[in-house]
Amino acid sequence: MRQKKHSTLLTEVELEFMTAVWEINGGTVREVMAVLAPERNLAYTSASTILRILEQKEFLVSEKSGRSFIYRPTIEKSSYQTKSLNDLSMKLFDNTPSSLVARLVDDENLTEDMLEEIRALLDRRLGKNAV
Image (cartoon, rainbow, N blue to C red; front, side, top):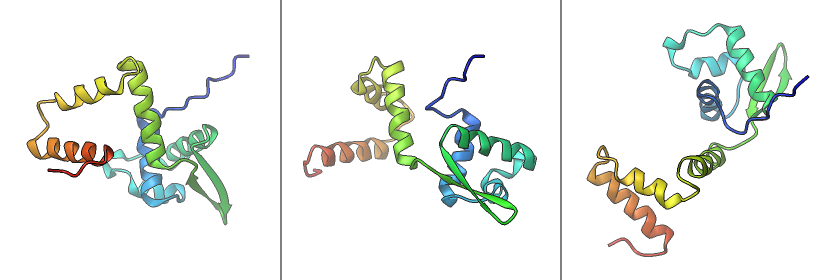
């Protein structure tokens, strides 16, 4: 029997659930469901299954508390963001972060304020005072 590949990236649904868990810094199935968009209208069993999958993928750990399980993240959101961006840079931008940034700043939907914020971040990273 073939073993499932251990994915280090989340599917869209898994990311939605992880975002909810990060927002409340862990909780029960019902607490996580309360953070999800109301139009999601998921069954308790479906939400529970997704959280168990996230635990199998080692994004969450759980502990029994009374009749419920409390799910807690094993990775910080910022760490996952870094991992995802590195993967995106490697796969889509030939492992050239400057190409990723160039694509981002070429986006016509970016406002002047957004571009100035990006400039300020770069200046701070390079140790320069923003002009």
